[in-house]
Length: 326
Image (cartoon, rainbow, N blue to C red; front, side, top):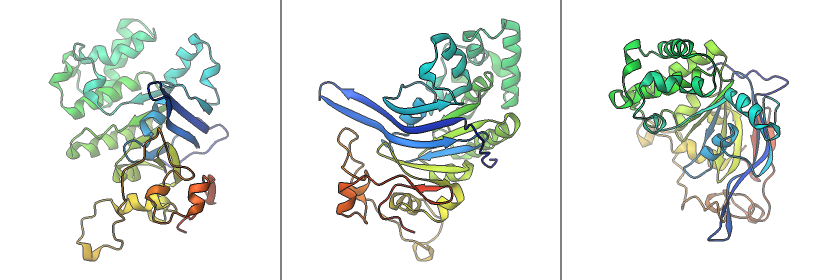
């Protein structure tokens, strides 16, 4: 993937973003995203990683406007979508798209592939049916789907082919940014590499910007320029992919890295696996202070009393920890 291209106006600007869901029966609030801040620059791949329940998917849906934040600020290309009229928002949000984890659920089983790919253009009234069909066929060809696939239905395609249909459908809108939510998780290992290489080729060709959400550390480190580590709705660490993988500052990041499978005998591994005790706490009743402190080997009284500040400890390398590892 190409390196980050910092500019005066990032594609996304996120400041203290909060997303909460009221639980009326329990008279409590679920804090899905709890005050995160970062920028995403044009042409980069921004990875987001964390355990299930950490808020990654909610964050991704909020970034493209599917969920309205409860607090903080979200700017898409310098524009706050909350300030736009309904018509202006309809035009604006074409630039910010999302691809979901399950390609089976993302495709209507009763629609032919060509109709699914054309659907965004038809909804957006981008042209007549002839021009939209031509644009859809071109997008399919670009992702490696031959013309004869146009008349097929989703059940006649493999998982990898369905994911290529999703990519083609997204490309028809020529978006500036695409949130990829676990887009290779449902695919066989044998074809993951092909799809990831396709994402890289499309990024170079169209100048796309990705927010790549996954729980697979090997995938995110391979495709990302920068990686954000998320836990219980909070960002624990953010930095260049190589630096974060080699010199993590947060104990949670170190634990994730140590759990990554390595094809070596235990005696030859440089670092023993760090075993996290217990389960991730409930976002309905998160711990005081540092969100990770209940599972952290380095936690102190300060971690329980005070939420750590989001600080830049190295150039471009941010962490929220009272006791960083280096």
